[in-house]
Image 1 (cartoon, rainbow over the protein chains, first blue to last red):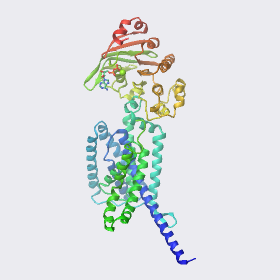
Image 2: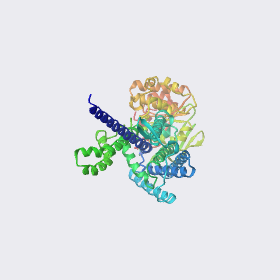
Image 3: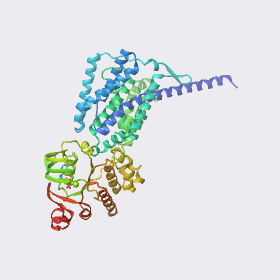
Image 4: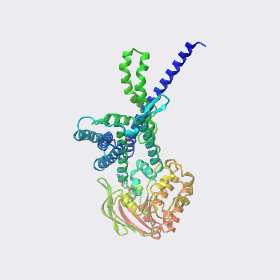
Amino acid sequence: MDPGLRRDDNGVAAGRAIAMIYVIEQVLNGAQFGVMLFLMAAGLTLIFGIMNVINLAHGSLYMVGAYVAAAVFGATGSFLIGLAAALAAAIVVGIALEVTLFRTLYARDHLDQVLATFGLILFFNEIVRILFGATALYMRVPDFLNGRVEILPGAPYPTYRLAIIAVGLAVALLLYLLIARTRIGMLIRAGASNRVMLGALGVNVTLLYTAVFALGAALAALAGVMAGPIFTVESGMGESVLISAFVVIVIGGIGSIRGAFVAALLVGIVDATGRAYLRPLLALFTSRAAADSAGPALASMLIYILMAAVLFVRPQGLFPPRGR
Amino acid sequence: MLEVTGLDAGYGDGRVLFGVDLAVGAGEVVTLLGRNGMGKTTTLSSVMGIVRAQAGTIRLDGAPIQHLPPYRIARLGLGLVPEGRQIFPNLSVHENLVATASGAGRWTIDSVLGLFPALRERLASLGGLLSGGEQQMLAIGRALMTNPRLLLLDEATEGLAPRIRAEIWRVLASLKESGQAILVVDKNIAPLLRLADRHYILERGRTVWSGSSAELAAAPDLQQRYLGV
Ligand SMILES: Nc1ncnc2c1ncn2[C@@H]1O[C@H](COP(=O)(O)OP(=O)(O)O)[C@@H](O)[C@H]1O
Ligand SMILES: [Mg+2]
């Protein structure tokens, strides 16, 4: 046997393994972004699908979660206390918003809702600047999640990101069980199809809506807390994730938690792999310079192209709510 | 038990009811009759608090309820089987029955399925996939599961095959037998004459006549004038 050939074989195999590990890393990055999008989208789709309200300020609850967690984590040194404070703050803010503003918006048309909740975005971004200053807050990865895990031999991946995926999947499962299996879940679904009848059968729909809103706020805050150590905690941080979350609920089918889950993972993975591979892929067909400029631009448009494609095939999204 | 006096109600600026009077006693079966558009559904909606009373009083066991929200009225013991059934189409039959059930009382999933055996095989089906007759049974079962002291039925036999109608009349008779108070809105006079104790006739939002089954049966002119029979 020719030893040179063998060495070459080994080189190709090693190259393949590295490429494979890179793919897995990109998919995990996508899954991590996806579960965060899911936490945002779940609240949005519940609020939009059930109360028929477009809440542009959902991203502000994400920001509130990130800020409170960063501040409390910084002050106490405990990530878990920061997390608990963030969830509590978002629930309180969510309930206050629902009672003072959203209740009057349910019956208004969508344009009024967009204007009012856009106003809220400006309000929250300004409040955060006043309270915490214009510079971004730093939030570090908690010690117990710091480090890397070997997902494959020779392929370390940040523990914190894996934890995000695990928590996101666990919350998705709990949410599914809540909606599909519990009495509260039945009432939420019933209210989505006929709120007047639900009230006439003895259910305090006002209270139910407040609870759903608070749940959505808590999920958004959880996403914000998770994002804290990865992205910057700054005023306006909720808006970009909000837009992606809207793409998710449109792809998934408005009102569908299951749709939001599938679409969030799809959007996350398409986005991450697009950013990683589009430029080298384009370089195969065009000049290096053209690929360098078009690749990133196209990658950031990819989720909207995905949305357009899904809507073309399924105008109601992947999982339109049944029986309505 | 239920006492409505001088009830005015409507939608927006349009008034529909102009002084409706009616009463239902414990264990009584009472009907609300009248041609289409005379205000029967609006009366039931007002009693439930879905449509706000603009004047008059609605009392339950002597206490006024016209300012309460619908869910509080329902919890006081009124069970509505609405016009058009309005079951939750995106919930299974089982979920439709248990979602709004109130724990205490004689009506459980088993006793309701005993009353409507046809629903037993369809427990896992989505409500929206049921036939009209099955949906009607589900709507009645759903209201019973709240263990109401007074059952309100709005056009519960509308658009159903004769065989299903007969079944619903049979169920209502057995409910009456068990002492259930019922307020019925329906267009079928003959079965109502057998089932009900007393009747009210609505004409353009006013109570224009009330009396017993014997009195109504003996007044064909009344039936022709107000009910188009
Ligand atoms: N939601 C509504 N909005 C406006 N008008 C209504 C509404 N529902 C019923 N009406 C009007 O109120 C009157 C009484 O209707 P209704 O109570 O449904 O009569 P019935 O049940 O006796 O057929 C009718 O003239 C009808 O057009
Ligand atoms: Mg009617």
